[in-house]
Image (cartoon, rainbow, N blue to C red; front, side, top):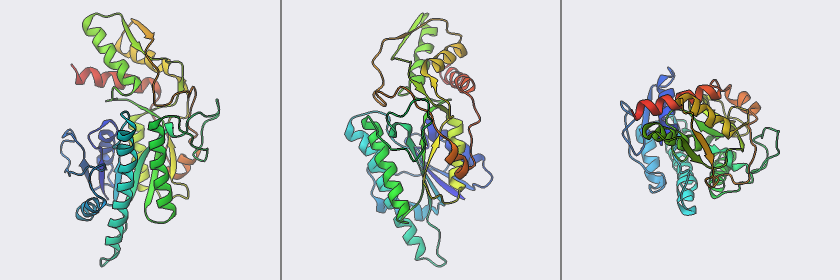
Length: 318
């Protein structure tokens, strides 16, 4: 099994590359990313947002990959930037994978089309019924530009898979946390402020409202779900939730991060709320379908994720 990973140098991509490399069924992982942090892996250059599907198909045929994993995308930006990074990129990926499959089918002996695994978001659901974990079959009603662009990408994969044009799976991620979490994430912002406060002798950090209940999933569990998706059989429903299955107040995660850092200062909730999921005060993943399709379940609890998040930040930044 040869796997090409887009966004390989990002928060999710680095862990996915690490998990794939550690799996004995994978013979080679090829990295496509903006940075060179995926040391030791063969690298290719292709931007999903600006490259053509024909160029991508040529790359897939040349590298002879058996699976393509898309960990790239945008968390913030203008509507145009979000659409380009989250939706247009996936549309190009679908067309490129489809074309590569057609070219392989004309060879002797014919080859199988690459498995396509893309990463969606819980923001696709929008506001859900409180206290009932959300299922993949529930209606997606995103309430932000980010959620809309991720939902559009998911729907493109669903349609292409239903028409037999791609062999695809979408992992609908809830709230990834863990080592390397970016500052666009509330945990990443908290880690940066806590680190600065400890260095400068500060006694408080400032974040937005932390009362919303979220389903936080460790990035290492996300990586293991991707590996499972690469090797899973073709499901009748291509979307799989990837979360912990538990909703906790965001405030609880920040408290665990502060405890891991031994930060006893005040956490002030006075900044503007996140624009990714406005009005969503509770969400958790129903993992029944995911367990059946992928044979996957999360391994890390929130305390372990918070500890690993802080340790990674402390080591990386001295």
